[in-house]
Length: 141
Image (cartoon, rainbow, N blue to C red; front, side):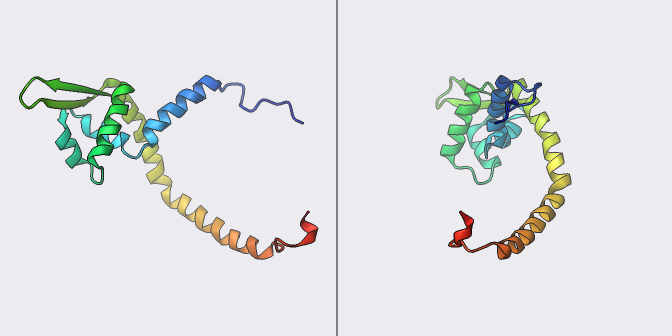
């Protein structure tokens, strides 16, 4: 059995956990869209809801709470009747959004290559499948 480490020497397990946390925000269906919409300054809930097609009011509320908890959104309640609530992306969120732009550019630049690789793999998988023995072949075990 191999005794080599599971991670390269320059990768800290704690850094991996931090990266996973960041990916949870970036990879969530709505997080980056909300950060982008709130990045230009204060925006009210209804404006946010209108600016993000497909998001439900409940999902917007839940995602805003998560982003606020993570320090990526600031929620400001103005003492009016009825109360007015505004959301603003923090400097931390702005930095995160800027980082996602590079990933977005990479995805746009390489989308066709990934689609071609998937198609080639699927074509080869079908050919590999034809070469396999039936599952009930006694020589498999």
